[in-house]
Image (cartoon, rainbow, N blue to C red; front, side):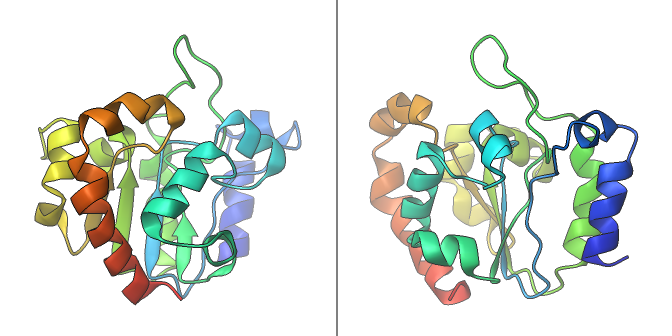
Length: 191
């Protein structure tokens, strides 16, 4: 299955037809030459409407952490983006609803198979970390502190949402020590 066939399969899947019938397309990027994959939660409402991933304040902060310009982030084929769900899940009481549980298990392996050169998967937030690091029982803070444990395959990050400002203030070590190391790794992988 190639990337075009995969997109059609995703859109025609009965679990996704509610979106397809509304003209909503799955939001992700695949590049056969990708070296880095960013796996986050799910597209937000703005991203779903614009069809541009990480095109908000969270994305601005994420690009800063990665040390990437907007142009590189959106145009480099060294970078791919696979949310835990490719569709906006809707609004919950305190933010967006979580991604659908079975979505990543169904579609991520097929997507990753089309990107044989991936060297690093960035796990943004607890949903991505819980799925890709199932044996890790530490909380998000400890997981991020111990990021080197998961290298070279994975690099766990907190969600860059403005709502996480309190976490960032409480954990200044993240931007002082983790972000510089992340930027260094990304600089070697993404042109």
